[in-house]
Image (cartoon, rainbow, N blue to C red; front, top):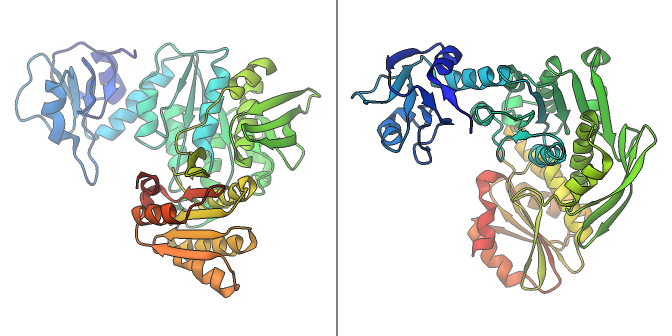
Length: 450
């Protein structure tokens, strides 16, 4: 439990004490529905919500105090009320203060795809030797990351995910977390609505290099290989790859019904075998990145093998299930062109009977949205996919590309994920392999709830 004193909170935030009550807090909360006894409630204010509306509920539910930017209308005996001009900045200040007050090493993971899975793999490997704080789920933005850091107590290390939707985001997060080691999984067309171009994505991810003293890089990624030498000067660099030479490589890859087996080749001459109970080529890359971090922090190979050999993945990321005798691949968390391409290739790789792709729109691509969906359509036309069930406005461009190439793929367009689910139930046959994928906003998990 991360205990905070009232003095610490005032020092971290520069706040003004309006009402003195509790001297200590048992943690930080931003949600009045889940606040625990004696926690400090931070009343965040956004475009569509205002935590001040729930201040009474938070304090009546056991909160010992609150950070506010609007003074409460009524006094709260026994509660400490601290005024700050910006409660989000105050939350970030608390996280930075706590990070600087602890002698720990921080590993930060960013990239267009694979961040959460890689972060979880790293945390599991490092936990074989260290006491590790890992950010929960995909809490990776300007609210989620500092909220994760506020849970820091007596751990030796922290493994944090860093997401970005516009330039400057990674820089902001690094100023809070002050990472020692950075991991960049890949660079691809994600959140282009905010970045404008893949080059913008690249430049944003590279912001991390200004802070870290060691970095783990995907050497198979064409853009990452172009990182200027001066940006890496004075840093320890560990590369990972499958297709090219690197410090950590995968060879002799064998796909089975229970996952993937491959040999890990280290540049120093060592080699060991690894069974990964997951599917997808991208998960091999995630594992290699995690192994590279383990190398940096002295984790022996047998501990790495045990940690990854029992790793069960992250919910909604390429989960395999059965439906009416068919294999169903659920990759529901999010979608961008790179992850969609990898998922479609995995569908083809795992198919035994017909291959059915149930696809939702890829969102947050801005002006690139039409081109991205057309590109996926062109890819599908080259793959042995038998049926496409499409949901969303942008997926019509996939159909146009298939029609333009004279594709014989059976194509259905429906209005909703529920409609896709009903159609899938009618079409599916024993022995089929089904992929369900789309951006989070498309709610493709509803396909399987019909």
